Length: 131
Image (cartoon, rainbow, N blue to C red):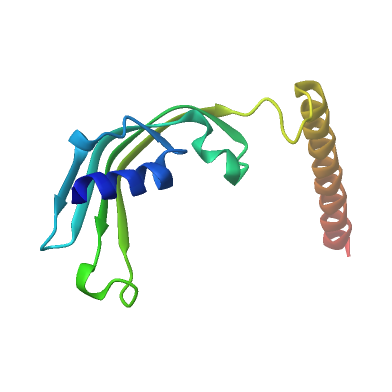
């Protein structure tokens, strides 16, 4: 009964991020306040909200442990521990709707700007050494 309630709640909270969430993977120790989920797959779109410059191809989450203070719920914090997070990622080919060619051109422009700054700095240092 309690497992069903906790499983339903965790499914709503974690369902957007992980696959393989099932009651068999759920372990509850009511007296200690521990909830543990093991061996779940991360969904490739799980980290999209972070807007990282990488695309997640696959992911694995070894375990999620929740320490729930059942007797002081609402007064003490619920602790969440993630263990063994593995990600297979590749560079994103599109950034904010830009095509790969536009991104490459922006990178080239940035490299040219940095080269110009380095040359200017080298010339400054060279002229200072003459004096």
